[in-house]
Image 1 (cartoon, rainbow, N blue to C red):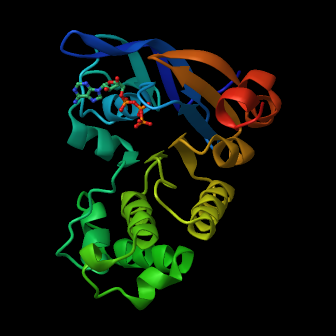
Image 2 (image 1 turned 90 degrees about the vertical axis):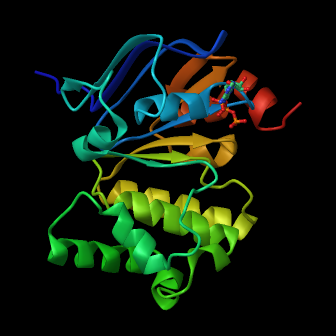
Image 3 (image 1 turned 180 degrees about the vertical axis):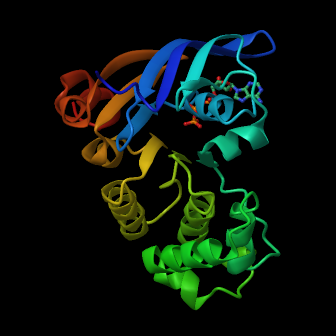
Length: 240
Ligand code: ATP
């Protein structure tokens, strides 16, 4: 018997008023995998993540997570079910310290010892956050804020971690650090759905990828297949 995927999205459609941003997409994420959605600006990637985390209501389609439907479930219940979202633009609480932001990521948990252990784990992943734990998050660099956003999402001990554009605005070195961390999290068993503009970086570490264009999935394959696909290379990897 094969295990069903952790996340299954079937024929999902999402609209803002009359504008349909996601026009019937289907994909799945198996436990333990990194799956990436790549595509041009406005393709519907962020809309897809926001719908999965309950912030937007789909027009139609079916979302199944960990064996039960997710459609119509309110956002806070979705976090409780094990789906965490590190949003585009980070959305941290700028006046709160690093440590306070991390604790907020664990707001549904009551196991104080476990929370402390997970904060230490985040500091092991990102030592700079540990060194600056009392610093207000609004004063962190873009890369450090991105690390904190990922750390905060991890604090809910998610079954699935959704990362929206974690490399946005980062220097090449910082971007490499974030990508290395995603790989490390995968090696530790975290399942990840990654939305990225940087197709090269995302496909290099993804088990599976889906290329989105104007609300539809136009191509799917393993990370390696897409990385070597001629149309992907031309459109997203800057080759002639
Ligand atoms: P990017 O990489 O630029 O973030 P994306 O693939 O994540 O792009 P979305 O942000 O999901 O794309 O946007 C998909 C489409 O929906 C775009 O045409 C966008 O203009 C539109 N859209 C997004 N948010 C809203 C909104 N709040 N109201 C109306 N239209 C929106």
